[in-house]
Amino acid sequence: MKIDINNSTPIYEQIYKQLLEYITTGLMQANDKLPSVRELSSSIHINPNTVVKAYRLLEEQGFIYSLPGKGSFVSSKQNVQTKLFLQQINELSLEIVNKSKYIGMNFEELCQLLKQTWEDK
Image (cartoon, rainbow, N blue to C red):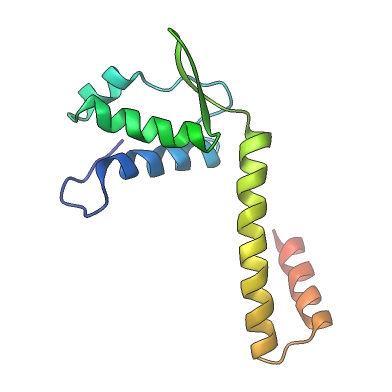
């Protein structure tokens, strides 16, 4: 984990974003144990309360869960990632539809473009 103290983004948010990326990209899997607050704060030389704040935010959003005396763990992907990705897809869909209409693209053309992109991936 890399923390940039010269970055205007708060340190807890940098931790949050990096862990979120690890979780959503599959680098960390469901039920993987996160470093303890002490381990992480010690390894990146920051106050433990900063790590607690990042972990709390991840837990509030359902990306991790905590077991008293055992630590924090990555939540099941299906619950968390599905909600997150559906929200992102809805936002992107609205943007795509608005831009398509703006340039005069019709529904069939948009569907064909989406189908082509789907098949290419």
